[in-house]
Amino acid sequence: MLGEKKISVVIPAYNEEKGLPKVLERIPDFIDEVVVVDDGSSDGTCEVARAFAEKNPKIKVIRLERNCGKGCAMREGVKNATGDIVVFMDADGQHRPEEIIKLVGPIVRGEADMVIGARKVKEAGKRPLHRRLSNIITTRLIRLKLRTYVSDTQSGFRAYRREFLPEIESDRYEVETEMLLKAAKMGARIREEAVSMIYDPNREGRFGFRDVVRFMETYLKF
Image (cartoon, rainbow, N blue to C red; front, side, top):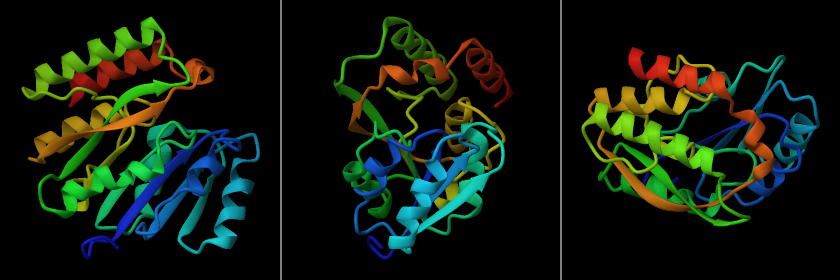
């Protein structure tokens, strides 16, 4: 609990048996609930999560029988999250659990309804040029639609007041765009807080041309 608000953390995970422990072992004490959704992993992600759950009753583990995408896993996580504030973060360790307080603090204080962790890459190298360019283009398109300034529209490290948590329709990486656009339409007060990010070049293969197409479809739809 933080300021009498129950805090849930939803972590979609796909083949993250190595990265997930770095996240779960550093979850702050004020977090009331952690929902790990194993998105049909083919490695030991589910077993790792369940081992942590056996030691910590705050952790719930949901296993999806097949890989259905990040958005799909987040949707299942929301169904099982009971917090007044819901935080989303990745399972690979690129986000620091210690920085969750930066996201939930403004919501608890009544200053925001949605807080995005604006990524500042400081370790393990920088994102390649094509990823930086794609992020710049998508961010500028979304700013144009929102008519407001958001520096990092694609960050998956974010928190929502329950009343402004949109229904998730997207199944894959376009989910961040969908949720941001929907929250803005709901009248959410959107704020950004600078967070650090540990870039992992091994994850580059997970984002491809189809995701760009899905982004444009989502952008036009919502």
